[in-house]
Length: 211
Image 1 (cartoon, rainbow, N blue to C red):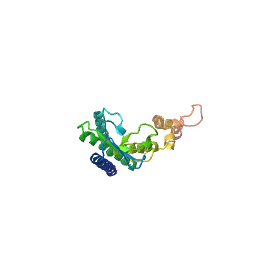
Image 2: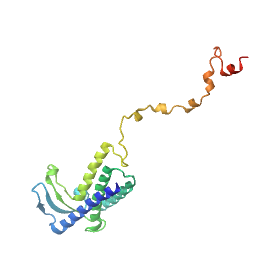
Image 3: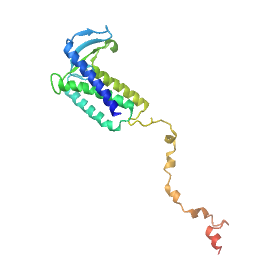
Image 4: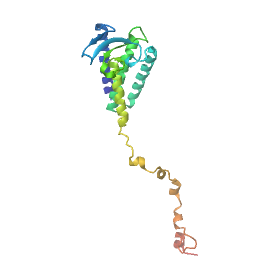
């Protein structure tokens, strides 16, 4: 599964960086270029904030957070056995690395470089101020949507069976498991120790005879 994770991450990262390099070389900054009318437009901006041009002015904070996310994803690889988790982590890793590369290498310089955003889809924002994004942002958002589905389905990262509520093992009475083990070690002779007034003989009496 780590191979699938890295394959997805490499594809997202490569498409993101190649598209950004093309934008910087070919598109005028700050101008809208229609591609499919109002459905899809290019609009080149340099974003100092988070995804979708949010929270600008705290670039170094997002650089640190992105580096932490990369470390956490790489740490989880040792447990990875699930295809769905591999795709999710690959999308997230590729997207985070794409924007992190911008912050480390693009103007105004390390570690506060501005992320290149250029995709504009006004119809998505339902009348609100439309945000501009990039391929890395698409990877991150797609990964998080997949993570929500994984969580709802209860799929473990190690590829084990899904946890099911209401199974017989979960519904068993825990009190039965916690019974006092001393009861199992009781003296067997106690079974042959009736009330002294009873005429039933003890095993010793039957063997040696009554006095």
